[in-house]
Amino acid sequence: MKKVVVGLSGGVDSSVAAYLLKEQGYDVTGLFMINWHETEGTLSGDCPWNDDLIFAELVARKLEIPFQTIDFSVQYGQRVVDYMFNEYQKGRTPNPDVLCNREVKFDLFAKAAFELGADFVATGHYCRKETITKNGRKVHRLLAGTDPSKEQSYFLCQVNQEQLSKALFPIGHLYKKDIRLIAEEQGLATAKKKDSQGICFVGKVDLPTFLQQKLNAKKGIVVEIPKDSNDNPSYIKPVITYNYFEDELKVFAEPAIYSPKMGVLAGEHDGAHFYTIGQRKGLNIGGRKEPLFVLGIDVVENVVYVGQGHNHPGLNRYGLFIPRDEIHWIRSDLEMKTGEIREYLVRVRYRQALQKACLHCVESGIYILFEDMQRGITSGQFAAWYDDEELVGSGVIK
Image: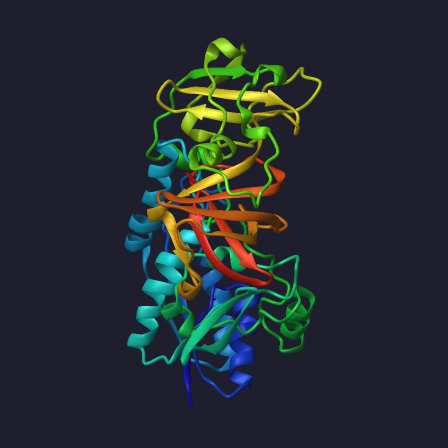
């Protein structure tokens, strides 16, 4: 009998994952991770994992499976939270959930599971895995989850073939309503428990308050940029499959560059590093015909640039760039060669609909040109590219 260690998070998805694996004949053990002890900045005002631990224990007892806890709070702080602080300090916007999966769930957690004698590790992610044979070798494909409203493959865009080879995703073929129904039928304590929100293992946070644990507040100015003052040509529509020179690709990929002289004083802020491109809430500046959005931040001069409306040219562009050392291929057998151009479907944030795009591989990295203009492309976030329903690679946006 194959042994599987399931990451029991105290939520309904991992609970049903454990149940389904047991029904399939696996020897199942539940393992709960404690990754964060601090409460400063969390909106609950309590340790976000306490209730989750109780629910996880109740589920394990109901399913009659062994249950253990493990504390990764030190490693989580070093690998995920410190990275997040450092990125915000640089004026970039990280995705801690992607980092959590890469650094914790499919690394630290997996190693702990194998030390317990596991053959596989399992999570409650809404994604699927398929194993094929190519040139005599097994290749593991990471596929989108069946439920489009819960699809989570994007969060796993940094996993590798070795990690996938030992991973199981028992609920990826199901819809959320089916998960709830199974949990109710089996009398699981998590059947009606709300889904978790916020930062992975930290919980729902007031981001500026959370970041102020390590990043100092510093008063600065907010400058409003008129729509007609943007002379950056990055909003000119490209022919995405055309073989552009790299200098031409840069035009589409680089964000607009602003200076205070280009706009008018609109207000003050408490620190440019507390904001992100595309942000609307938290500016506390009214009296405009259209809502204000963050167009850019300058953490050196401590200036936040804003503009009115979704269609502001500074908020939208057709391209992005991923440096060579930030490119990750889940399917290493599909890795692009310098000079190659390839069409994929791409998303730059969770829940974004897949966008038609073309990847241009150059010596310094990969440029991605989109068929349609994209709003709020943000440095530090992950772009993930798909071949139909298969996620084949990803990278950190410069």
